[in-house]
Length: 154
Image 1 (cartoon, helix red, strand yellow):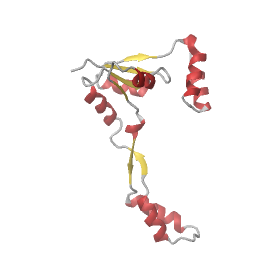
Image 2 (cartoon, rainbow, N blue to C red):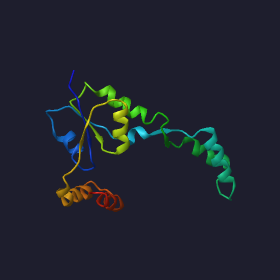
Image 3 (tube, one colour):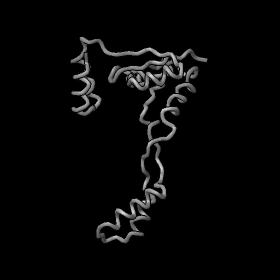
Image 4 (cartoon, one colour):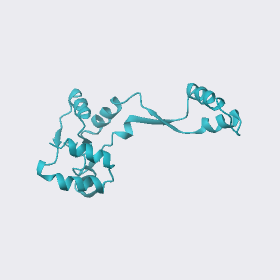
């Protein structure tokens, strides 16, 4: 059984880089987005809503033909098990890996605290702003997100 270190690290502090390059350690880089939503087919309520929307204006395709296509579309929906599924996944992997990386979002840290999961928080030195901005651009973060993070830097 491994002694697992749970690390809550700020954006662009090397979570993904470490998990891809530190071969001597078994590292799990947990992306919270995979736990927030589920992929599924539309339910009856959504199909009925789509029917009403489709019938509210003229179309060349019949309502039934459109609904047959709509029923086959995979949609993303909020996962009703979130955030419990996220916390449970971390708990299940403690002892199985050396390091578990999660984002430093305050809600994530609150969930870890509530679940009595010990963790450390990593954030960049205040003098590293320029380097950190460069990392954000290299990771293809949107300008609006980068500006938001810069405004909250200190």
